[in-house]
Length: 220
Image 1 (cartoon, one colour):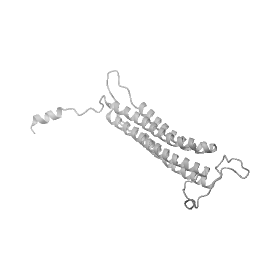
Image 2 (image 1 turned 135 degrees about the vertical axis):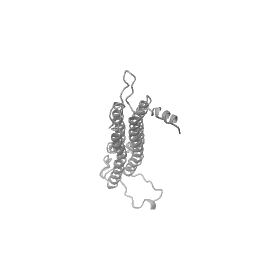
Image 3 (image 1 turned 90 degrees about the horizontal axis):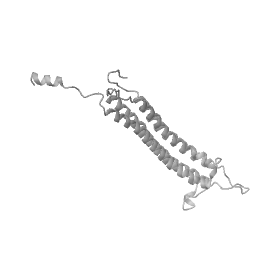
Image 4 (image 1 turned 30 degrees about the vertical axis):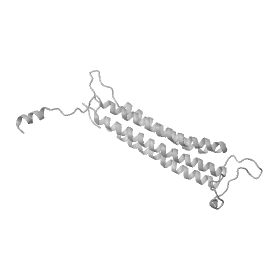
């Protein structure tokens, strides 16, 4: 390599840190956080909500108790909304002189934050929906004394919950059943840990979203 080649390489400018297309990557992170989290929230609400309505046909009194999966699925959408608003407020507009201060470093950080929150919310929503679907139906089966076994021998060891008391009155509140309470507590624990998946993604997204570099300014 001669001196001319060295001078030519020195004259080359490095790739710009604040290209005009960096904003599109940042807004992609905003859309990822909102859309994927809402997707998970809708998935969880759909799966657990249909089983809740199905169970409420036989025991309307258990609907309010088993509505917890639907509520927890709806909270996931709020996580995505929080991250999307924070990221959107962090993206500056170009100046009148068409100078872009939004760097590719900040854009990638915002994209990572949006994907972290969105995909975590999607996974948590699906988990809540599947667990809530099976859990609500199981609680309803125990409350309705529905036999899940084809033979008498296979059902040995499983208690029977009557649909009416000794006076013949319908039993609307089935929360006093030990079997039903055990199923409900187990479902609730699984739902809590499923919801924690979205919370983990929210925490990491908030931390990553604070990483920024401004062209012509200082980096955080």
